[in-house]
Image 1: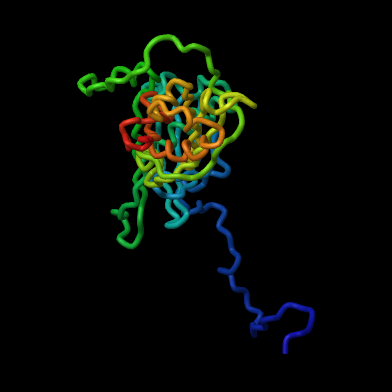
Image 2 (image 1 turned 60 degrees about the vertical axis):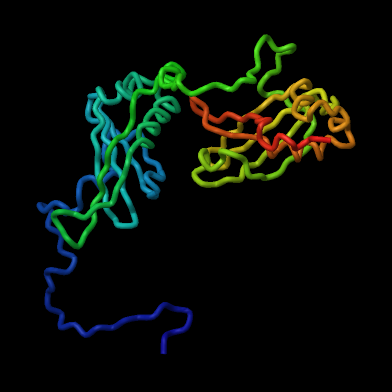
Length: 295
């Protein structure tokens, strides 16, 4: 029986002879663990975080190579207990970011730049050529220089026909992008284009507000769509004239009694898509269900 209130004890007969190979440490022998896995005590570490790269949950560590501006990135995949490293030279960093990550200020700016590079890594599990019973990681950096709207503008396809009905002129009143009034409706719905921006998820959370607190919804509405994949919110301001056009001029549909039902029907015309400069674009396409508000 095991003693009560005490852990079990294991007794093994022993002759008392010296067993030299138990607990013996050879100080002159180095560990056989690959150096790319020994990241905890390496000098020059500027990043250590968990990321999902190529649908793999990996641990990413980044180190500065000596006094140079080269960046060594270590990727460790716990599932197969394998790691690999990739050297991102200063020249490659300048090609991708316009300058080296070490030219950014320390703290959040530098961390953001390093994470941007790390998220452009393609990680693949392959067979280890030196050991048929093990797997290995293959890492490739896939990133181009990102110059914001200038690069996006140059990549636009001008052969694509534009919409015939396009807003022109100067708005009657400036509306700040963060303005919102009273909440009228909030629900999860399936939008056209949502699968493209949410990696397969077609449903987004849409909130509809008046343009100012206490103001009737018929004077203007604010549509907000929340992208759960990136935690990004895109906003669309719709003025009174556009609302009237959407309902085929039927002013009674914008009255306080019918406004909520009208908005729920109008949600079928919402379209969400990636913008040319990053982020999302939200719009209302009157050509979707054109007979929606026929009398």
